[in-house]
Length: 404
Ligand SMILES: Cc1cc2nc3c(=O)[nH]c(=O)nc-3n(C[C@H](O)[C@H](O)[C@H](O)COP(=O)(O)OP(=O)(O)OC[C@H]3O[C@@H](n4cnc5c(N)ncnc54)[C@H](O)[C@@H]3O)c2cc1C
Image 1 (cartoon, rainbow, N blue to C red):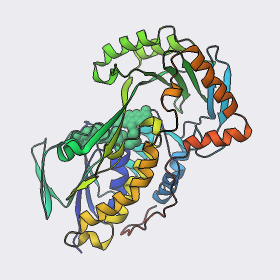
Image 2 (image 1 turned 45 degrees about the vertical axis):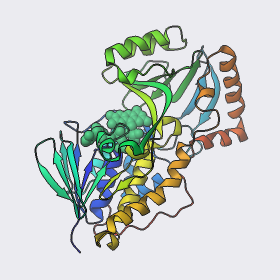
Image 3 (image 1 turned 90 degrees about the horizontal axis):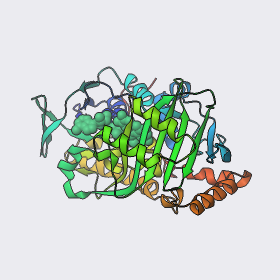
Image 4 (image 1 turned 120 degrees about the vertical axis):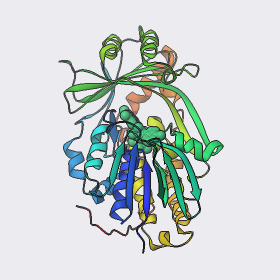
């Protein structure tokens, strides 16, 4: 069998986990990343459902456990900071999952676990692709032209290469939600809970502990007519402070903190739906293929799972036969589709119910949370976090190198 070559574009959770498994399966793997160095940063992501199994098979579960954010649960609070309903970590996939980790830490763990022969190149990206049936020819921004057996696009929700290849087969579902994430100073009254406050006007403020002695804050609001991710960051911060003026609870602390925070990041939540995830020798994975958004939940878990599933089908001898790669890509898609469809299906009333406009709406939501946080209901409510679960067996992967 000839050794096959893959180019993976995007070095975050999806791209790196695919590189890990594909290399272990004997492929020659190159990863390119548009950013000039490894992209750290981001807030909590979680490893849920069968992604935990994948992580165990990668031999990385202990490392993730050692770097969790140590959050003890999720508490919904009122304007005075009093708890309305609390959901401690008692279900591995509850609102706070058992394995909560900063995105940058998870990405670094996978990066450092890559087999030595995987090449990771920063500061480069794809300009042009020609899919000759027997190989794919790629022109890179750096001026090189390279030939691969397969191109895997793992560039996240706003992937340009995906749009070039798949054009109008990519559809977007905008949820009308703006979220600003940032790191602020920890204060004496902060505990180890994720505290979540809902104000009128479709606004939310949340504070989460991390393992670095700081607090990860989030300001979210619902407004279909405003997209802060599309305007310059300084202007977005000014708009944000206007939107949150008078919201209550810790509004001024977070607004003041974001004014000097180095890592404020704006997102306008958008789900990605594609009629197909592959064409010839090009395929997509992770958020680029199926972004579920934090409302659907489990984006990083699905990226970890996707990397394994893609590599598992490509590890079969069939991929080395004439016309074999598209068959393997089709199997990957068939396996992943049901789990993605489920994750993209938002819970009833979401997101509107959770972003009430009026005092009555906030009161109704608080009553709902109070009831949901009682014993048996709590277990039921925790099921909102049950993403990345499936009855399907993980397919076997044929490894040429064992995992540690
Ligand atoms: C810096 C950062 C911070 C994040 N913070 C959070 C967070 O706080 N909460 C949350 O829920 N999710 C966050 N996410 C998204 C989260 O990582 C994903 O939802 C999930 O892990 C799936 O990952 P992915 O690898 O598919 O996509 P992403 O994590 O979005 O990674 C895509 C990668 O592709 C690279 N890329 C983009 N375009 C190109 C190109 N043309 N050529 C080459 N490389 C390209 C990007 O630089 C990035 O490294 C963040 C992502 C990033 C990159």
